[in-house]
Structure formats: C-alpha cells, structure tokens
Image 1 (spheres, rainbow, N blue to C red):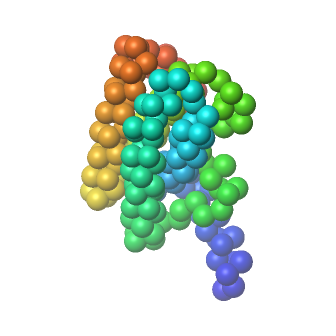
Image 2 (image 1 turned 135 degrees about the horizontal axis):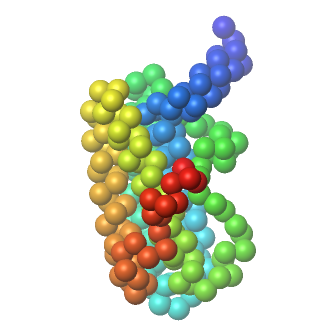
Length: 181
C-alpha cells in the first residue's frame, strides 16, 4: 500500500471514529483545540493592553508551555495506541471548536482575556466527553492524562475569572447551551 493509500485509509477511519465517537477521535479535537488556543494566547500576549497585558505577561507563557507539553503528550499517547492524530493544517482547522478572528487583537484587553477563558471552557466539554469515552473503552492512561488537563484548565478558568472580577461561571457554558454540543 502506498503512503497516499495509507493516508486515505486513515482519513476514512478518522471520519468513522469522529461520527461514532471514540475516545481517540474526541482527543483529536482536544489536540486541535490546544494548538489553536496556544496561537490565540500568543496573539493576546502581543496585543492586549492595560492590566491584562501584565496578567498575560505573568501567565501566558506558562499556559502556552503547559498546552504544548500536553499537546505532545496526547499525540504520543494516541500514536502509541494506534490512533490517528491531526497532522495537517486542514485537519486542525476541521477538528478545532475554537473560533478565530484576527480582529480580536484590537478588542480591549479584558475582552481578549475573556475570549481565552471561554476557549478554556470549550475545551472542558471535549475533555469530559473524552474521559467518559476513555473509561468506557478501558483506556486508563488517556483518562489520567485528560483528568490532569481538566483540573489544570479549571484552575486557569478560576484564576482568570477572579482577575476579571467575574463569578466563576459568568459568561461560560451552561447546560441550557447543550443544543450546541
């Protein structure tokens, strides 16, 4: 089988897995979200002004480092278990559920930061679903990695919401929004 045939087979299986869904497929969404989120954090660090610039100077690099390390760890975990991972820009764009908009860099710093918080929150939806699927598929190492990521993200949401002067769940996903997921 040629490399093109193998890749076509991978894409076909990936499509099936994403419509089932499986823990591996859901983790593919998480991987894409992590990559896009690191880009959005980098952009906010460059353009946010006011107190948010100081907040991001203090926490932004740590967020990026943690998300990049988790990205690498999850990719390796999936590959070690024979799962497909997103490998092309088109796949990352297809699998991410985070919205991008170049105009955001001109928004007030607090809006840019709150957008990052909402992205963290969006990631939790996919992580909790992947944890459930991982448990059903008896994949303990994936469940452990994702549980650790979930705890870290929740801590970042709480920290940032306090900085913004918000209650913990202000402006974030609620069960009434379930039709969107």
